[in-house]
Image 1 (tube, helix red, strand yellow):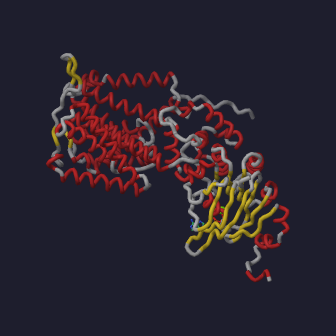
Image 2 (cartoon, chains in turn green, purple):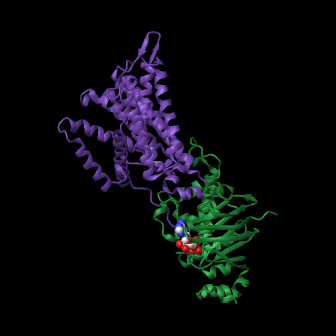
Image 3 (cartoon, protein in one colour):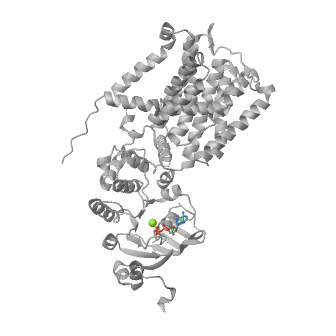
Length: 253
Length: 333
Ligand SMILES: Nc1ncnc2c1ncn2[C@@H]1O[C@H](COP(=O)(O)OP(=O)(O)O)[C@@H](O)[C@H]1O
Ligand SMILES: [Mg+2]
């Protein structure tokens, strides 16, 4: 069976800084994969590369067997990759409903300029269902720009869900959420992972070890370790990175 | 999106306003001098020009300072059709609108690759190039002096002839085409395409992440805006029996931007309201005081500071305050 995602030697530099350095990652699918690592490890840049936000200097990205390296974001999205952003990014001037609606409708190849938007019954049903599932239904008619940070994060998830993705990339989805919102979002993500492959960047270790099937630890642009939560928790190098022990290349000897 | 559904009440108000606007040639002369009917027609025409700015700025987030180019091409298409090619009334009008749309289809390929001020600058540059070419080809275009047109009747059958020399006929002729354009915009803006445009306006990177191709959406808007400005230019040539390079200068484009912003960008009728308010003001003030531009400047500053959503926004707020909105359904908790 083809892997959901196969990444080989992915590399990206900004000037002298190599933010992502020869990263390999294979996602076999049917699992919730978490990426952890200290700030500046290159996690967000990694997402930017696979979602088409940035062009990689080197390396390839395959999605369901298809080479998507260098494709623009909208094409990657149409193949079934959805993404939320670390710095929340929604359509501020549109209502919550319209945010989700356009995401749902964008699955049709052609945006009909002649038919009224509200006449699409299937889209309307999907939008209601997605708003309910993500927990933004009570804000249906509010402007997205007026939502709290936590609600915007939920709306981002709703927008991503509305595109019916095969693979969902979540960049610190619970950052800035209240404990209740976090619980709800973790439950939503866990539920989602049953039908959609999820890659989650998250700082909250409690959340990560609770819901991840496999974990990749990144540090300074490279993959430090991959494994199950139990393996990761037991790895002394990972503990070093998280305990902030000074980096020393010779320490291994 | 709920506001996109036509309720019977809204439909009734709309029909009443439409009737009032259509009857302008009959009731307006009872209040003011006859020439105001022509000013009303002129307002309708220029409002299409503002609407083309608005389609780009208010809905696609692209501020064009070059829409006068397409207005000018629309006008010269009519002028060339009538004076040089002998195309007759409808052929010339068709030529003007088609030429402007085609011009936008070409310029758009380059322009919509850019956004923000880069986009604005390239639209100014395109406008200036065509302005200079038009002024340069004085033999063909008449340059700043322009070309005068001799208009044939637009309808003639069995001895019945209709032409634009009758004031009421001309007004209704203009209203018909302007109305069609507003109708088309209304349809397009409430469609999935319209929502796609708004998504790109609000947040282009996010629009890409949900699968929208910002380039094509902006390009389509640019071509449609070229069509609207071209229709405005063609109607203006027919209305004034005249086409001139002076209407292609970038200050004309700038006026379209001002009408749009004062009227309310991102609303269907904002450009019409802004155009009407400022053309009436110009008519009233420029006859008694030469510093019309100063007054305009003050108005623009006041509007941008205190009513950034323009007259349309003020009207919307007033309606909302007058009408007790149906209260939200009670929460279960
Ligand atoms: N667009 C950019 N231009 C320059 N440097 C960048 C850019 N994006 C990220 N970086 C740098 O790359 C490194 C990795 O950043 P990032 O991927 O955001 O890390 P993480 O998400 O793991 O915290 C950081 O040092 C950051 O400053
Ligand atoms: Mg990050």
